[in-house]
Length: 87
Image (tube, rainbow, N blue to C red):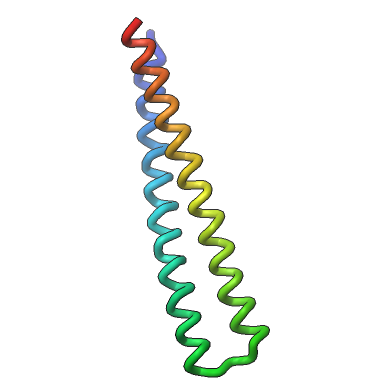
């Protein structure tokens, strides 16, 4: 029995995780813009607004990095599978 189906399922799962993390990162970027605009209008204390925006931006940065890493790993698995099929 070949490991081919397992690798294909793994790569599909990695692509799905990357897509989900990328969508969450996009939502986080939108939230950072909205929070920044909201805090500029409402005139909240600086420590509150800076902490909130920085926290959401940091989570967005981490999610974007995870999405890129998962997508690269899935691409690598598919390249290896295509190379094995070619031989």
